Length: 335
Image 1: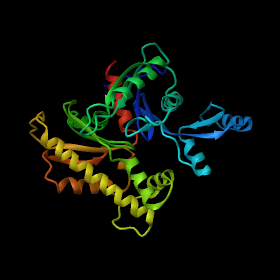
Image 2: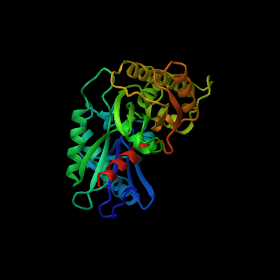
Image 3: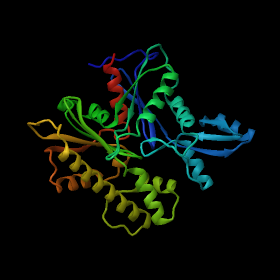
Image 4: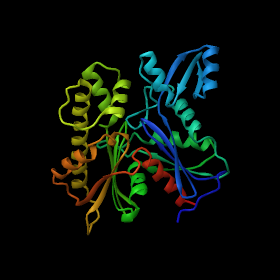
């Protein structure tokens, strides 16, 4: 039985995703979550605007004589102004082309988790696996987040994003199976055996790839394509609507690429355990949420002679919060 800590020092699970940042904590038998978009937008400074934003509780800061609105409200202001939101992260890690990446991600995390409420308060955060064909690239990202979180007073450790999905969703199989997190910057995959990560990797094609590719095909803003994708897209073969058709084409590309990478990595691995029964596969993340995604993924997986027997393909109970929940479970078991 996982132990719940008092509210002045409860463990925290933190999913630091390219698209969203999610915190999780447990109170009694309930998991509770808070979410902010991992984005920001600059507004011209005026005292009236600053006062109004403060009155409405809109998270913001002042930087170089501009107002910086960060988190979920940035999307609304970007749409009003006809501009793209700025992103602290790209392809699963800190955005090297964004000079304010560290500062703004710190602001967003602070608005969600705040400083530690007690000495030694545990916090576990997610980090991506190295993309296929790339060994480095995650070290700077992970170390920078550890510094930010330690600066808030937390006792910090990290967990692989795919493994967090396993922790969140596969208790019934003794944490044996495949966790897949389909996020904004990356799709992360982890095969675990009795909670031990056996093979982890990621692929670059994910939600942001879908958004930017569809925007290029239609001439729309990426931000508006993403809103359409999250609010209205579903799998339906051919669409007469140009936006929906572009989303359909690039979603299919992502699924095909992900399944092909999984087959290649599992087939080529020399460390796979000898499994005596089929294992479950769980899909999570915002990019896995459109109606029909699970079914299409299962079709492509079933047609590719996958080297591991899969007992079921299912969607996480709460796809947007699964990795944060898994990180929290990891923090709770450290107690």
